[in-house]
Length: 259
Image (cartoon, rainbow, N blue to C red):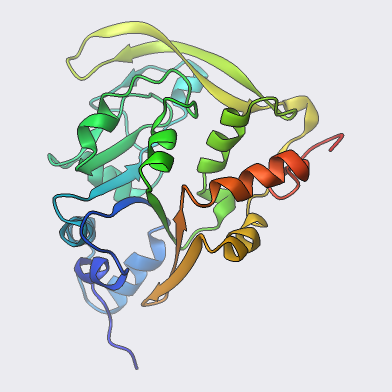
């Protein structure tokens, strides 16, 4: 029987190296269940510390801290609005070595080399060419996805859609609400997101893209305990997503009326 790997040692078993730039998406339930079963630490700080140690001071670790309440007209507070993308991301937000990017809908907790560059971004659109997603692509970030399907985690595809433009099933929509910045100053702000056209009954798929990523050599896999981890190169996978949008009517990305 293979020995249990504690949370603090996940980083050592991911094939990371100094200077790596990683975006970590996860469903942490399996990780926690394994830790409890083995009477081991369930503190996600151990997991985060292990990642930071592996990439070193020249590396960057990013967690998605999305919250969609702003889309409902609810106020966003840079200092206190929680992440709705899991317990690990909320742990990252609570740490002094991580800082949050500014967008009230699609924000990220960032530590390491590119922290300042990402936190300084002032993108209005969630997925625009001036957004963190574009930065990830052009700085060779790798998306590590723990125990969750692409359909529920690979938000990067919406960036590709918006960058291409002229997508028949989505459009750019503005949202306005109160925004409190890191200094506690509140103002009325407007941000946008590339949203589905409801009248077309758009349903996200995304998972079928995985076979294209395999063919393109931009995805790899590893197992830790019972967790399944995907590793996707966000620059190298770009062309595969573009191809599906331009030449396959986005059939691997989504389904919609009139497709």
